[in-house]
Length: 578
Image (cartoon, rainbow, N blue to C red; front, top):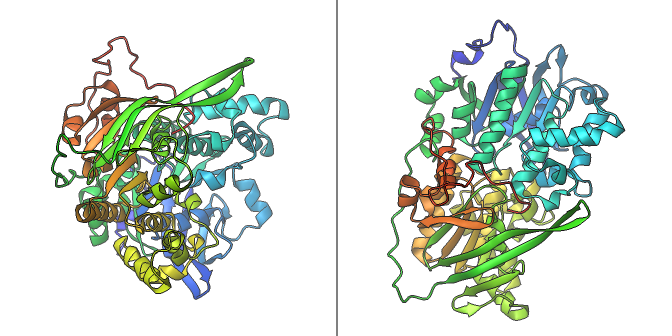
């Protein structure tokens, strides 16, 4: 039963008597090979001018489908079966495609969940923002380029003029997400539908983006429908909260009231699982490695440089990884944290030999693999696996899920077909997916479900090392907790080591034995999470901690670097690779 508060007018509606967006009885289904699957069942939802309404729930709960149904941007096999979607005087559910084009972009902006598939890979970032301005008559061909740079700057991209000349693949995941936000903001719409807009962003940049969206609601009355699995973000930013489960709204109301006194058991479970809203459950620490124990991974003075686009006729070089040294022992988790573009993912790619370092050494199990090629590199692939940040781009859309998970086993000729399928079923069970998922394809799964498949695939060969590049950023909090427990359980059983890359310090606090904080390609602080989180020495670490959403209101911190008092308090300018 949805509380009556759902239909009440907002307390700060400032005399507004009707919502900007009014959804009633919305039902959506998808056609699959096994028949129609109901994804949204009779949803009622209001979004008021000048407010943020957050929709939360597990992966597959129907929250993204509800958001996409508003602008009729459902997948090709999706159908609105019933209900109305009233926006101003229009029922968007019945508008023609030509009429919808006058609303999309101009009056309703959409920030999709995945920047990799939403940005045109063969167009520069600035061109893609400028296109929105030209299409809606907000800029001429001559003025659009300069105005696009200003929009990128407003969306939080530093050095926006340089970013405008770059292609999507030249930016980090967080930067691409901000470019998408710029596209949505370009026409200054009345309503912004933001589908997981900050899932790829570190907490400091997340705060900047959310501050900007909040400013829009306060200054111009822009309404925001925020789809998120991060209850901390919802708690900090939304005036109203809508909780969805299995395609239905199970609870809705004023955010503070719902969080303080949740009425539905499902809401209570979500709150209990949210790491940023609860005290982290400490992991049982592994015994310290003997002083003479050989580390599984040792990185020595690693450097990686990239060439940047020419500016003013000069060739520029970016040092993305700058003199990084790390040690990781068996059975331990080393977390790399830092803002987007700090060098975390580049460091991981160097460790896995997916990129060549400019200088430095990488040792794996005592063997120098810095220049490994051929069979040596192939054997490393068996012992070291990667869970990518982006589940949309990392799964072959032509494969069934069974083929995706068993592909590493086939490549290394492990077991026969029956044994490989049995292993796939076991792994799916461990990442909380039903065995029936084996027959589906990636396009039939939600973002969170795809990421769980990616984790299952990485674990198929029982590797010694798993590099986890934002492995739970796409997961809702309840499944996130299950996956973190799974990773800890596997580590205790097998002694696997994790190099865990994350911008979510609340997650890192739960799983890491050691934490290394990266900024502008360098490691600025290391230590056990208990020490680093309670007594951070570096100003940048303190800012990361203060930006964690959903906790206590952050108290002012002194951002003067204790090591270098002359260092600026502001964050370093972003680089082009994470």
